[in-house]
Each structure stands twice: as structure tokens, then as C-alpha cells.
Image 1: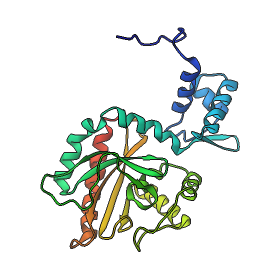
Image 2: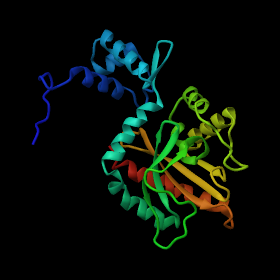
Image 3: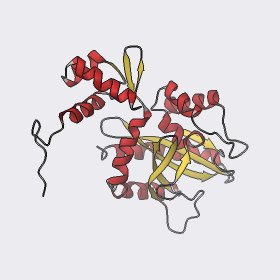
Length: 258
């Protein structure tokens, strides 16, 4: 059994710990920080904080806007590493199974990795014909999916635009929105509404519905999503019935996510 590294011991990497403390300084109410702000929140010397923030920016984990620093979506990759390695699907499974039974559709949890959405947990009812088959680790383009728009809503508009410009945006169906301006508007709408709906943009006949999944600290860590068939009678009414249930479950799940 290995022992936990003791701060300031030979095996404790102080610089790494300081870098993590700077990342943790950002959060609800502290989306943007100056060097002075970050130094105050971490208790570190300003010169040290400045070097750490510039290093994060150089690696793509932060951006600089004047004297302010903001984390970028690349930080979510760290969260994905945790989700993929921690068997979080085991923790989420009872909640997902309950929700799937309640709404009569398969439900999934996904995270943002680069310009794609990656599925990390899923539940469906045995014998049900699902609208869209999703497997663990499956990747979908964020721009065309409801879950992707929800996940991108945690980013600044400038970061969303940068990601879209770096993405090949194909029209997967006649309904797929591919214009940068229109997509930024849809991400803003997801940020305002607290959910996103994709109407037949990934596949004809498929409606995607997603809500943000936060942790106890209020940070979005994933998306809770489901699909239904657009051809079913009263599809819009089904979406309106399912959305409150997804949001209610997201609030419950937030209580078990660190």
C-alpha cells in the first residue's frame, strides 16, 4: 500500500499542486479572474500565479482577455478522464434506469471532448425499440447534437466560435444547422433555457433532448440526454413532458457528483 504524499516532502510536486489550485480558483461566480484575483483566492504569490496562468493559456486550458483569464473547454478533458476511469456509470446507473423507465426512452450521459460528444453512461428499458442506438464511448459531433450544445453552453461565445471554426460541419440531414452564427445563437439559447432540443439534425426522424448535469459545486460536468422519434404522434408534446423530468433527475444526480 502506498502512502499519500505529504506536502513539502520529496515526493510532493509543489508546482503541480499550485497549478491545480489555480484551476480550482475558477468556478461559480468566478468565471473570469485577473492575476490578483487568482492570487487572492489561492493565497499564492502574484508572480507565481501569473506564470501558472500563462502556462495554462499556453497549453490551451485558459484564454487571456486583456488582464482577465478564463478557463477553456479543454479543461473538460480532465473531467472526462475522471469519468472514464472512475466507473461513474455504476454510480449513475440507478438514476438513469429510473429515468428511462419513467419516460419510456433510453437515456445517456455524455461529456465534451474536443469538438465531439462522448457517451460515458447509458440505460434503456429491455425490449424497448430505441430511437437511436448509443454505445459507451460513442462519439458524435457537438455542433449537431442537443447534448453538444448544452455542453458548449458552459463556454464563452468566443470559445464556441473557435471550436465551430475548427470543426468540419457537414449537413447530416436537410435540417442540420451548420452556420457558425446560427449555431452560436443556438448555444446561447441552450444557456438561457437550461436545455437544448435537436430536431432531426443528426438523423432524420430523430429528436435529441439534453439538459446540463452539474456537480454539488454547481459546475457543469456532463449532459443528461435522451432521444425520441420525430415521427411519433405529438412529438413536441412528448418533448415538453420529458424536459421537466430530465431536469428534475439532473438535480438529483448533482447531489452525488463531487
